[in-house]
Image 1 (cartoon, rainbow, N blue to C red):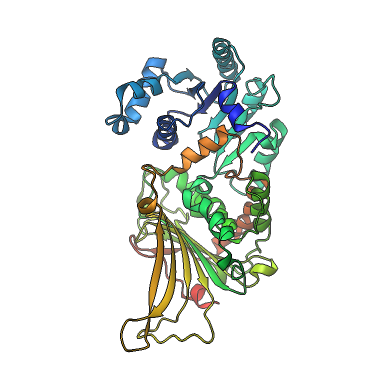
Image 2: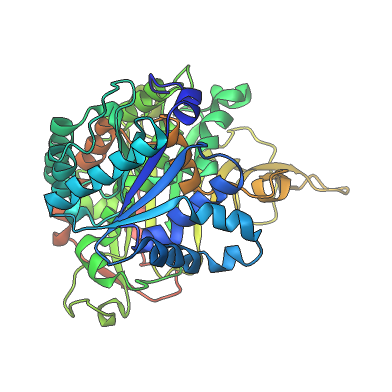
Length: 481
């Protein structure tokens, strides 16, 4: 938690959430819905307002219609009075992100709302805009004075979506800009995977169950496989994706954050300071990839270059697989396989921990499988934790078979609604809790590992793979232990 107590933040002063780019895709698909669920469940501060800021011309009434249409499916079954009260939280100001005067005007509008509340407000600025606008928006926020607060105990909070730069150089430049304008405790770098229920549970599962503690290292674990596979293609993101690629889009952030949660040391305290420090430490121990031919595979699905806004000779990867290692005694020699792809055979996001096999196991099977225990944290298609054991088959033989213990969040939780990652992002930021937000050391360590791969791997072949498959062939990769 920050120095601001959550109860004080929510109940003592008004709270204003200002969303830059509120008419964009992220807001329509994620933020508005997350805000509705928080409101419906009574989790927003009593004196709360949402101010939209974007380039489109809207009156407050027209913007309320925009919000209503964006949430039409949800509102259909909701209480009409509750919906109207929710819509009453919104107001709108038009402006371009590169025009300082519009920020000044926005600041005057916020002051008028504060006067109406007879109190200065706790202000959160959410940059749901293209990363290309980050620097100018941050500079204008600072120079216009809009982020200043007469009470130092309630500094403005800045929420920034990934990606944080395109490589270590641009990430460091953006970080220097942020550090020059705002304090670290004001900056909330969003990687929504950290806010997913299953990712949060990794730490609780690991450090609340003694039976795994002695095995959670090179002595007990053979390898860890982290996969984020999608059946979808570009879905209108062709221009962005052709300039970004899969490794920048999900490798530098989502997959490495999942690696950090699996491999980090016990933080001993469940607060932002300790947890973020342990994540940052493990990411700083990533060993640079020295042999790309052996440890990296990159691919592109057939038909990618036929998509809208994609050049016919684009060398963009839509798939990658990387073998990563950590230079720590606890994880010496344990490979972490990072794999992600578009247009794959199945949609799945999970982490599979493969434990080492016993040298003296009583393991008679009828197939070629060896008895190996696995622990799987699944995010998609359903949130669950499963452990594969081996047990004797019923009957007169001594043959064994795999058995699975499974805990499903959706089937076993009493909650009628499992909170979405963006609900948690907004809720934690409102409460000043930075635990599930990436710190500057985490971001730079991740880019320090990824950038040399991006700069060098174009000398390696770009394999093509069929849509709806498991990706390109990688026998040499898989053969290396």
